[in-house]
Length: 94
Image (cartoon, rainbow, N blue to C red; front, side, top):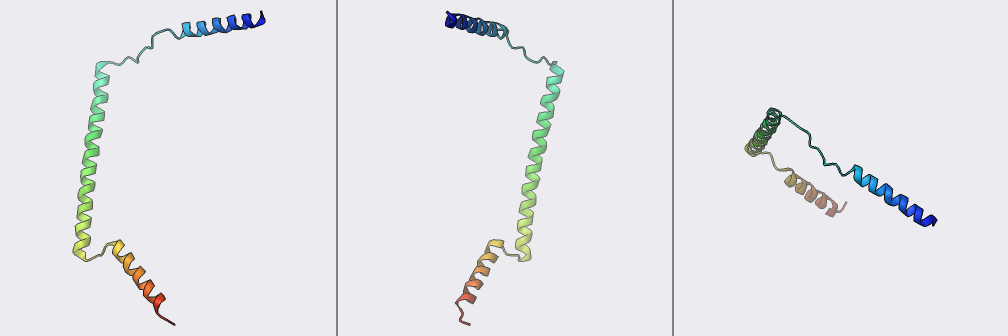
């Protein structure tokens, strides 16, 4: 009997919670002009980001060509040369 009362109470509580949540979800209402304004801001942000990436690529190309023109070597080649020098000094007897 005690088990039946608890089951009935749990069932009633569950149904009341479902009944409260049965309302349809309401969307946030926005005016068309406000939506258009937000869309415009997003489009402007995309354009600015695209311009930033293009400038960044141009700057990288310019820096690369400047480094080649000035005769600077790539860091990887320098590291390989240093490791080769280190191996030569280790191989030489003292």
